Image 1 (spheres, rainbow, N blue to C red):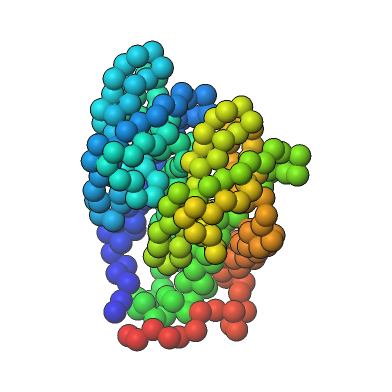
Image 2 (image 1 turned 90 degrees about the vertical axis):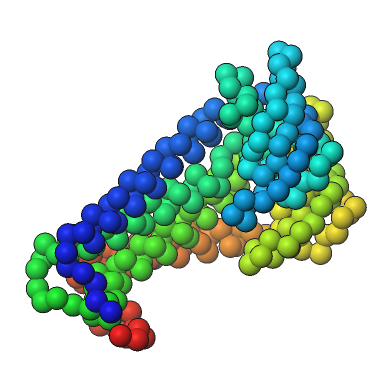
Length: 287
């Protein structure tokens, strides 16, 4: 298998990056409408289903100014059942279009994922473009994989993935410290999230009387169990976490950050053509 030297290869990657950037812009617009100041309401689940592996629900709720709203949304947490209720965050300007389960916070994970993928595709397009500008013989995928540029592309992908995880974790830890209040949470649901392992949904009430529905990795917690959670009083629906943790989450976050920095340096050396031979990708591809 050979990587085409035709300009269409770079054009295709650029088009994919632009499509990703467009989708990221749409998601950012959605997040901006559901910032911390966006109102919340108790919504009733009318119908649920799945679409491409994602759970969707038709919900109805009444806004703070008395408007009755019925709409469908894929931004729901867990596996809600028809007839159950969920706390939602909505936009006062257009509550039917901008609404999300409050348990998902004010920043959608899809936004971060699309942004990371877009940057990765752009980086790959740059590597391919730079390779074409340099000219040289037509080379197959095997040769590209073991080249400086192939190593740089792998480093960039790893840096983006680990950096995204580390950034989200550091942001969360920055909003939670020993002085923040705690509350007792009750586990209301538990499900298997594929490779992510078992997850739980839980509910707790803040000192201000706000009911918050959250999600976390399950560990040994079962439905009906209670455990302490620590939360940021300024935005408890987004910044929260178990108060009885063993510190493993922080270790994971900082490990991802270190891996991201090392991978970025590795990619930079690859783009500059400075990686030693032993640091290049091994020839494991079947041509």
